[in-house]
View 1 (cartoon, rainbow over the protein chains, first blue to last red):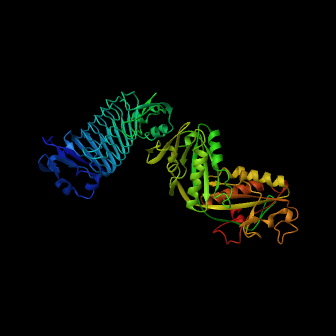
View 2: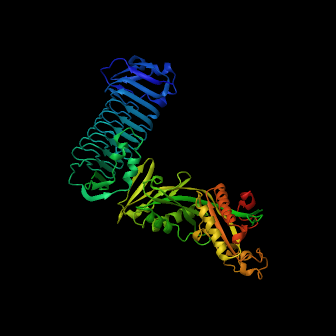
View 3: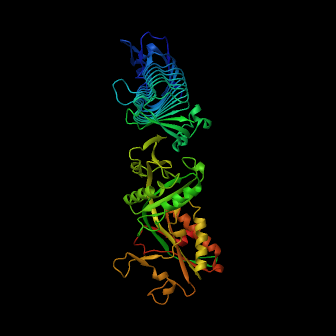
Length: 270
Length: 299
């Protein structure tokens, strides 16, 4: 069965709320009902078939074509199924995802994967700020699942991260891992200023030495038994993280943020 | 039934339900994994006084273990889930946590989850951290040689304890040699352990005693020195030594298989090596619901 495909006809001037177009909602609707769904577009509402050409049948596999950076909330609260996004995704892509998988072939905007609970979000390009973070005012970010970014990520990656794994093949901006409660963020590239600011627990796994704040204490170099297991769990990914040659278990360990409870750690490959 | 001159008695072994679990111990090398495993499964021959029955199931190659190091699979059996959990926790805490370079992982993924490293983590005094990898939680407990890594829980499943057979021989060395041959083969069968020293027990017991405080006492019917003094002996004049192999396993089929290869190994030595009979311990079918009929197993 071919994927249920939404091909954007023209790029609207206003942002579009794509949250109704998720597998677990669409599988209960027939083609006419799907076409009649109204999406918020700026201050107005537009029918799905006004914005998109609809083809294909399989609601468990949604394909969004000609996507661009104003299509927000793609895969919001997704509860099973697969969404592929050809082009860029707007803000809040994969927000609150429960299960399933989202793959964005372009870039994603701010708050990608924010507060997601489970599942997998893969972004081929770059992402904006607050990747896997918490919405403004909320106290918990991503609570489970895995985010893989093949490009670079913006500031505040994993802000308030509670659980789950964020993998970044490129570099991360400032305040990476800020206010982390737990979980794992791995960055193959470089990290910006104020790494792990106010982190409580959790692991920041780095390939390149960061510039650390004074509130991180050097615990020395160690061989950690859990790291091979962590890398082994990435072996199915289409990513350099799956390459055994990029795995390591020998690290320099820094504990912090001592300005918080100091149970977090920054592990740097040595 | 006679196999290679060895008489297989028309009797059965009587076994009873237990709760079982498996844990995987790894270490820097097989030597230290085995040391930890031996410590953890020590003093665990019989639930009569040890609280559990435990043994080493087999060694594991690095590609069979979660952390890619050499390992040993051990199994623990107890009469109830609560007792099993208690034994697992105290043994893991005193024998594996303390053993250099060790790590501890679940050996059963299904079943009811019981704590493995979940409570040991408090040894970390607040410095412990957990990591969820592929849906499983692991505790990293800081210790003086680095970090002790332990999976939070392992699986508890229904199991069977007390499968057994007796080797009746013309002499003590012949009985022991036959049992050694049997254990060698039985160790190749997965999901079973033989909890007694070296897998062999020379002091098989019967239920009850003339002393009220004892629940079990020597199985006088199979004691060769009592042939003339006990009320009912099961031994003919030419039998001078009897040894028993007890088997605990996850399923009846596993114990069936272990008994078959064990008895076959004994029979392969045959009457020419002094092996006279194979029998089994039972209590008239009143104690346990699992009956292992020797002749059916060897048919």
